[in-house]
Image 1 (cartoon, helix red, strand yellow):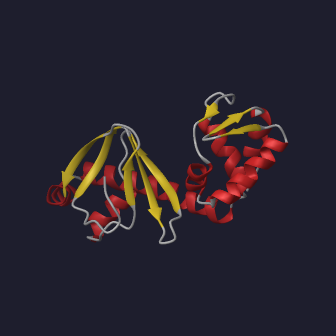
Image 2 (cartoon, rainbow, N blue to C red; image 1 turned 90 degrees about the vertical axis):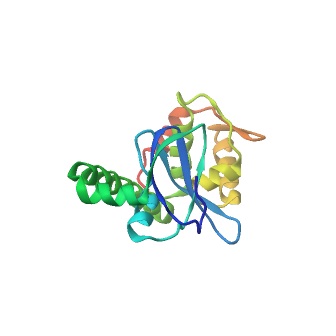
Image 3 (cartoon, rainbow, N blue to C red; image 1 turned 45 degrees about the vertical axis):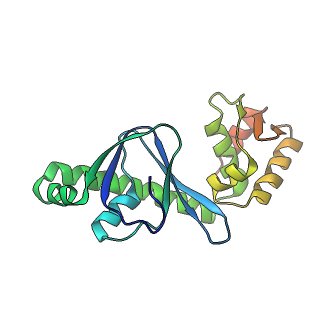
Length: 185
């Protein structure tokens, strides 16, 4: 959808689908900041439009995605002319910004074991499913290094909580993971 450094020319509202917004560091590490799903707009896109800045991150579609595209001149006019549109944009912006701040707090202050358990429980719908993700993908989701995630998964496997396969994690003890996931960071 957009790349770091691209000029921001349109307001995007995802109608259906999912866009992963991520930052890639010069050393090759990446972190998923958030996802934009049905009925949501991208906090970075809105900020870039308002401040007339280039994108500081990239947005990648994860599934087939359709979006409402509003060119900047139309967006600017609608913000000025429509109180309803302005409320919608800023309410969405406020909510998404709150989510982003929570994400930063989790990455900076959160325990990796708790965060990994939460992610595994979220990814396994009923707690007993195989999750088709690599250690690197999990690390990107959590803003960590692959090595850290691999070590933590080995600890979970040693406790019998997960099974580790090539490109897949099997949740074996959902109650144990859920108990850890509910802990405070």
